[in-house]
Image (cartoon, rainbow, N blue to C red; front, side, top):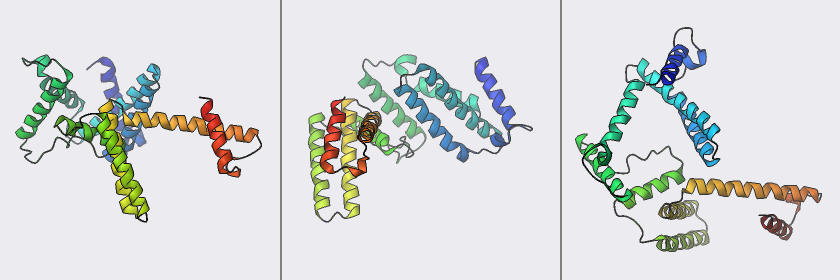
Length: 261
């Protein structure tokens, strides 16, 4: 490991050691879990913002969580950061025989096929007879992200749509089924199920188009937020609040905001 990483490991050892920081000393795997998620999302946000300086800082914060968790494991005699690095290095070499071995892969599709074959071999060596290619998708992921990954894994096994148009048709079908559930009295469980199917179909379309649905929704959220805030500003300039305006007036205001870009 480099001097900088060695120094970080030493700093963490001191923080956790006798005379170290009371807060750091009382942390556990479970208590650090929310920080890991928070830092990962902040890395994603820095990527979305295309902000290199922020990305460097957020990667450092995420690396801290990796070092912190590895230190806890080392204290319990489980593994250390060196084991983590060696493990991922071995996995990368093992799963890239077309780079580090004598196999070939001339396209991304061939790489994915080889990747799945290697993972299947790994599961067999571990005697995971009932294992699924879906096992590696964390349940803690945001549901929209997980939906895209589930659809992606299924597609690599052959369960894919012939093209985007077919998924659009499926979205229409799911929309009709949702409307029917609402028309049948809106039984909550049925409505939730149909809405979930619709969202999954949308995530599948995003995957087929090569679009990150989480990122697309985040940008849609930002656009809506900007427009809503502008609508609030325009209403207040007219001496009103949005809740004091009627449906037609609100619609006119929204069209005006959208017209501004």
